[in-house]
Amino acid sequence: MDDAELQAWIEQVSLASFGRPFVHRARFNRRLTSTGGRYFMKSHDIEISWLQWETYGREETEKIIKHELCHYHLHLLKRGYKHRDPDFKTLLARVGGSRYCQSLPQARPKQAYKYKLVCADCRTEYLRKRKVDVRKYACGKCRGKLKSYPLDFTKPS
Image (cartoon, rainbow, N blue to C red):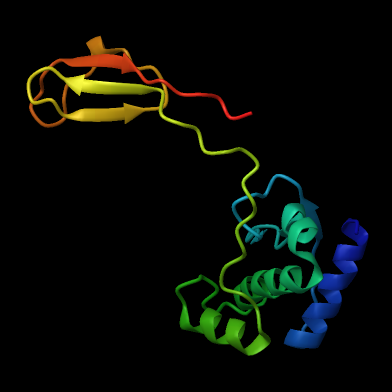
């Protein structure tokens, strides 16, 4: 699916679900990873996550489109378009949009801790993923000096 097909699809969903036309621009954004889509209040454009479309398909993407169209139509009608507004919640439930999009599978595995910082006075331990210059920091509990120790870890293959 390309941007022109997405534009036509959003226009069709807008008329069918809301009874109002979508007259602005819709496009895919390949960089959206933590959100399913977004609505721009100044230009009234809508962006949809390409990764959501690719991963979950037409049904989930249509729910995201309905969510963004709720923002769009309520904003143009000068009604409550924010997530917390009752107008938004009731319209979203009426048209069958989703409140949240599904999480995308993680591209990178979670990074393991590489360093352990230990307070010389109270023995409090802190785990860190990056190396820390212990001369610049002190213990959060007692303000004592910290000592850094590398942790043994194996890289995932």
